[in-house]
Length: 343
View 1 (spheres, helix red, strand yellow):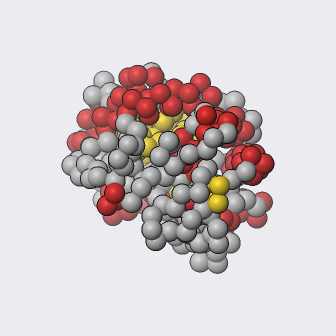
View 2 (view 1 turned 90 degrees about the horizontal axis):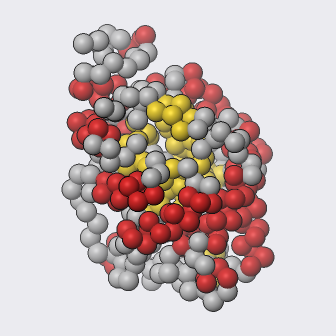
């Protein structure tokens, strides 16, 4: 039976274990130029030293006005390749594989003078009203996704993740809550997502997997549930997605969005439902930072990989400690062997 420290392979991606560090924005680009800094280097490489099998670098945007804030990472310029490659190369030295989450914030771009979106609907009463994108502008953004992934491949990433969750641009197009268009992008809510998938796949090596993060449920009145998520995920799977990273919510203000679950593993049923319905690999996320629980998600075949977010923010060496707690063998850096004795 598989467990948290069983190796895993998807196409050309070979992981030493099932532990994922999910993308978590650091808002630490102090020069506002989209370039990764020493903070990002230490932040990610320390988790590679700490044993994570897959590290997914935070939301990295395809254009300056596609950032949540001006302190976000970007891949709209060739100048941004080298600082990311430095991180990737160092993580590889410690046995971790590295992905990057490519995105556009759409109407949630807080520092854009005028955000853009499928429709001119603000996120809330305190947010700027976005401008609805023209067809030509949509095509330009699809091209920017392609070029960003081209740069990511040059930087040496092992896997690409598209951010289609949490109310950002791909999610905004996919959701009837935020997409009120009457053109072809409103008649087919998956059209933009499919075009992005096809564009980025054209730049990816054949054996490189494409992950898409989705919200498996919306927490707004009239928002979609898991059945709709399965439906559009099936479309995206046919377009070229190899694995789904299952989160939830983000499309509306928390006060208006009902109350998402707060118990441990509350999003695992969403991951399991998509895995079973589409026979597709999935990453589960959401309060899974207790080693026994994370191990059970794999052992019970609820998901193929487990993402541990806040647990890794608290402890870069979460993976090594989980192996010790579960009495599983894992590679420990020579310098740390006295702290993680072999059982």
